[in-house]
Amino acid sequence: MPSTRRSLLTAFLTLSLIDAARMRAFAQAAPELPLTLSCDDGNDVTIEREAGPFFRPNSPLERDLYPGAPGGERITVAGFVLDSRCRPLAGSLVEIWHADENGAYDSIGFRLRGHQFTDVQGRWWFNTIVPALYPGRTRHFHFKVERPGGRVLTTQLYFPGEPRNLEDQLFHETLVLDMKQTRDGRFGRFDFIV
Image (cartoon, rainbow, N blue to C red; front, top):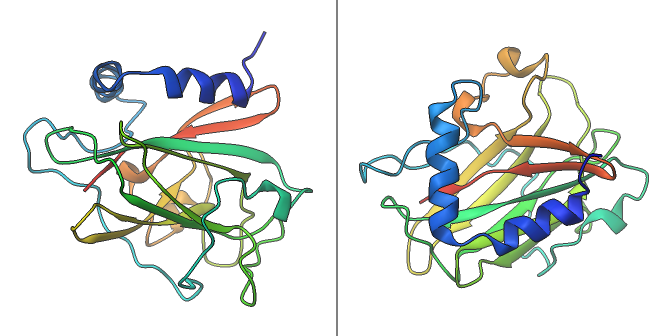
């Protein structure tokens, strides 16, 4: 019987950082799961991607974005914010925005936009919907991640196996979510290294 998004999120939240580092090493050893760049050598960080024209500052402190698009397919996206040596970065700002189930962005309000701060283990998560495709782009989420007192990483995360991935000039294989299908929607995992 497949898991639920809630059970996967609960399991994720009970992970210690050591377990997360082991999971990262396992994922990197499996060529079909290129999740994020390695932080073992202290040099690799998550790559930048442009914010695009739809970024709006001052998003609400909100992690449950699903009520803004109840007709969309549910997804939970989650991960850690780590430094280049895989140490958790508590109190990091993680901001998300993305298209709705019709491929449109809210340009007036803050529908499907929110931010939060990582917990003491550097964990973050959002409950939202799978964004629709729109002309010229593959399916993606936009993120800004800022470590306390540090630089802002602006990037985009992508879905595995999307036909348009290779046609999208901004797509990069190291920015693909590790995706699980559950009984009540998808669960995507990505660890930012900043």
